[in-house]
Amino acid sequence: MSKETRPVGDIKSSAGPGRPRAFDEAEALEKALCVFWHKGYESASVDDLTKAMGLSRSSFYGAFGNKQALFHKALSHYSRRGLKTLRDVADAGRDDPVGAIMEALANPQGGRDGCMLINCLTELAPHDDEVADLGRHHLDSIDEIIAGALEPSDPGQALDKARAYASLAIGTLALRKAGVPAEQISQTLKQARLVISP
Amino acid sequence: MSKETRPVGDIKSSAGPGRPRAFDEAEALEKALCVFWHKGYESASVDDLTKAMGLSRSSFYGAFGNKQALFHKALSHYSRRGLKTLRDVADAGRDDPVGAIMEALANPQGGRDGCMLINCLTELAPHDDEVADLGRHHLDSIDEIIAGALEPSDPGQALDKARAYASLAIGTLALRKAGVPAEQISQTLKQARLVISP
DNA sequence: CATAATTTGGAATGGTTGGTCCAGAAATTC
DNA sequence: GAATTTCTGGACCAACCATTCCAAATTATG
Image (cartoon, each protein chain N blue to C red):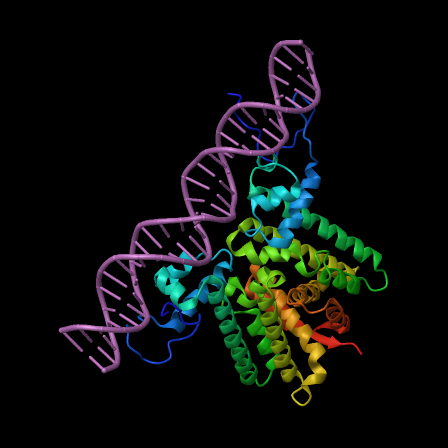
């Protein structure tokens, strides 16, 4: 039976016979990411997605399987990229790496849409183990990055403090959602320094 | 025309002629609140709601107008009640009111469902001004409560610090969503103390 | 050019959504 | 007990949902 479809998500590996894909998969994924970021998972309809991605329903399902699979792929991509950015920020902010990280966390690319991962965690984690797992891993990684900035010589020791710093930055995202101006948030964040009591 | 309906949300004020309501409105609202809390706004269908509230579709729309109106009412009720609880906690925790408040914020009644207001802020605030306004007011009130606990004599001065504390507690809700055990979160929170640099 | 592979747009699917409507039951006042 | 008012359950609606299917178009290989 040649009816068997390729496993979902399998990317066309080599040029065989047949018409080649007319769109860039990574580019389409990026567009989808924006839609999910802005509207959330449930509120993003397949219509919204295909329209933004610029492809037909058939291409959509052919290339990504279904809405949920696309979403997981997009979210995972987002996480990977976000962590990379954060590491870069940590490296760049030589004089005050922690401050730089905090600033980056509190001012995500999404502006008032906040951090897509936190959004999705809030919306889906209690009902979707895969999202919860990804979220936990993402947050753990953030902790490690901050710990590394706090105590380059012994990051393990600074983990508790790092966790608190991360929570602090993530918490400010709620303020942003509520419409508190970014400037004021930065101000609050800049003044706050954490101390770990023994 | 006697067809004109009572303004939505107008509670039957006095006993006139006619069949009285067979359900308790406050009780029904509470049930609806739980559904919204657990599933979020979009994912909570009118079917889910009516079933949980134990009333028919007609009674539902008759009493609450529509899904959105019910939601706003529930959320506003939630905010009022939550702030009251928080003030009580602050009063009760005489030795360490700030710690008590933080613990209460980080361990909301909803368990892994987190704080309903933060959830709704994340889901709706960018697209719903009413929710954003309510959220901002709620967060501001939390700040004031914490500031009052920090500096009973001059709360205004402690506002920045209070904001940071509130963000810290709210940030930990993301951890909870991701499945981090409550114990570990409390541990991190307990050790963290904030300092405001001049 | 013929064949095979794969994409494409669009129509059609069955299910769910929020919301309306109506006929009848129930409970109050007079 | 009659009149009036309101509640109740369930049928109904149009719109939207994610997904499937198909015939036609396109492009690679041989």
